[in-house]
Image 1 (tube, rainbow, N blue to C red):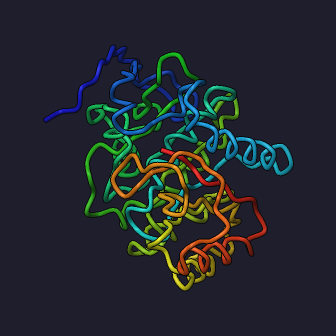
Image 2: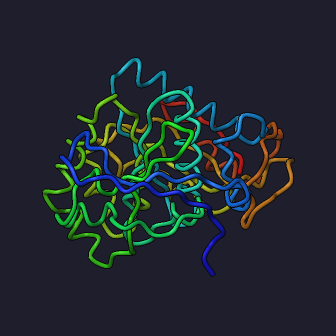
Length: 285
């Protein structure tokens, strides 16, 4: 069954790769966002606060470094990286121009999270050399947010990500008018070598880990594998040690103070996260 959605579409003309006004415009439906715990577009939901904290950290980094292209990745599949990427892009789009780029070509989920049909032209078509970046753009009405989604899951993800078109994509993102902040939803670090093929184009990355599932050893291996990509911080998701109620599969939680005692595995992962040079935020969903 297709997710409920409302879409008003304006097809633009095909234009130059950089700065063209092609693509669609869509209006999101609150029911779809609520069903998937997308809270970043709301100013009143208390669950948006961790994403605002992430936004503040990222904006400070942007001001200090001038960097604008950041990946949201994870240690394992299912840790919640797309959940974090969509909500972070949403809160960013409330204050700055923002692009959300889907490069998890094997398991694209952004459209499902937002209740959108598959695009006519996807970022995978851009990487295949069959379309231009502007043709894959979907603008979100009411927000300064443009999304570039995957049209269909790709078994040839490695080939596409290793192509010269990927390098050109990142060059085009940095030359977009308005200097948007670019959030890239990438594959998990150890799904084939997809992330490593994307990494040279990134300015930095945030790593999503899952309490109760991600081990200290797995996190250490991930941090080592990410070098030399700069790690802005780690995001602890699906927190089981939070006292707030679970509201989603696996337990996306409302924000709550971390209790003084945590399960042994949680203490182990938390200890590793505290060694990172960047800040830490626990999201809600």
